[in-house]
Image 1 (spheres, rainbow, N blue to C red):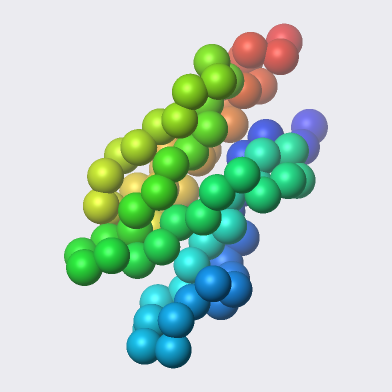
Image 2: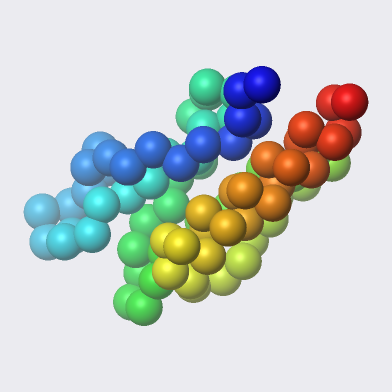
Length: 80
């Protein structure tokens, strides 16, 4: 079964002075957002099965990957 949410590393949208890559947030293969590096971590939102957006604050990319894994489990449970 394909995962509902994926993070794809990209340099698209980066300014010249940005040293950290950005991450496109894909929902069923379509871009729905982007994570970008702020002062101490990545910032952005992740889609949830209920239709809302989850914001976990300024965190490391590993925290976002863990949140994506949890949300993918929730998506799988909600689709049966």
